[in-house]
Length: 524
Image 1 (tube, rainbow, N blue to C red):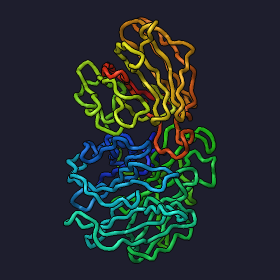
Image 2 (image 1 turned 180 degrees about the vertical axis):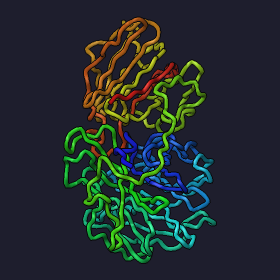
Image 3 (image 1 turned 135 degrees about the vertical axis):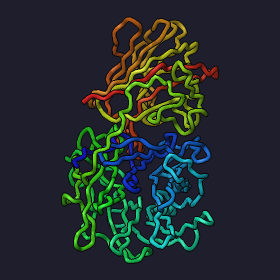
Image 4 (image 1 turned 90 degrees about the horizontal axis):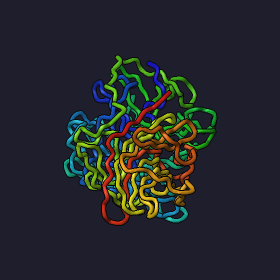
């Protein structure tokens, strides 16, 4: 079966792949977006559907105040034959210039993927990228990278292992440093697999950008010592910037019922060689084989990620197509829509029967209460359209459609109020913290509904609007798609572009905006 990579396009990093029976699951990071963790389901490894967002209540995840690109880092989904186990990190604060990372790690479980998921069990805060290994003897072991904040030390200090007691719901026994990494450094993302009497430790190394890589080590004992793969890294694009799939790393393994193996890994698709990746870090699949020497390798040879991969042939299993248009009539937000840091209900998001109603809250720079509902951009040839009713009475009241990366980086077609002109439109932006307005003067609009769109045309995107009985009119300049990417937004951010509906009211009146429908479409 030939698959086109990435299998999960758009912002879907840090995949944790799992098979239970004939069902395959991919859990990916969501960072500051709520609900936390996206779990996709497939029966054929080709067609994937969004099946669950388990961290859907504040008892499991409260990210108010979390820094940009904090929140959910690298979840691990596993199954012990009875229950699903989800290990996750809620990064509260981080930064390469800061000594500490506040990264509490938690465990939640459920009998069914759809939930209910149990109350979270706090595990530790010693580092991030935790995973849970279920050994043959029934014992469970937590792994995570350990962060060393002390001056003069390697902050990526290695991989630690400690036993988890389900009965006591806590970590027990000593914490062992089992692997310090290879010469590639930045050792993180550990997963353990048992095969042929060996424990295989799979790690991400080289950092999360263009030097990213997958490395493997093995030991006869879970506690080590571990010998490294003689051909590490087993997956990387670091030595060939011309490859269409870049940033290959942070991998996890699984096998089919007939013992064929594959790995899932994150990747990026830059606009130019080692350039900007506006779709963020995505998820790809590659086939694995085990050599006579007992080491895993890519089935096609070498260590480069393939844009098309030959995976085990399974019976086709497509899912129903998600409608492009959302009339907001289902009684709850469809699963592709996300909010920032807290549940939609806490932000005053409401489905009224007439559409999606947002009460104006804080600005797009806020990390607390932002009335914004967004969805991933999954293609550079895509469009989001919407129909907006909004009656601003003050220049501090705004609503519209935006392309959003984080609190310091966004571009926004907003409807507001000018003291002299009344209702007006403008395209405004924030680029690495610097605010700009892109029209020489506000554009007056008549009373009534305003339709808006943001259109991606390959390397650029632009905005347009229309009112009843009129044609679409472009508004503002075209923008580079790379403006909203990890590379442009500081280089150490980890998300991707979202297309969003938003409303702000800094006057405190909570002026509402109603979006009657939204339509996301992609073209070849």
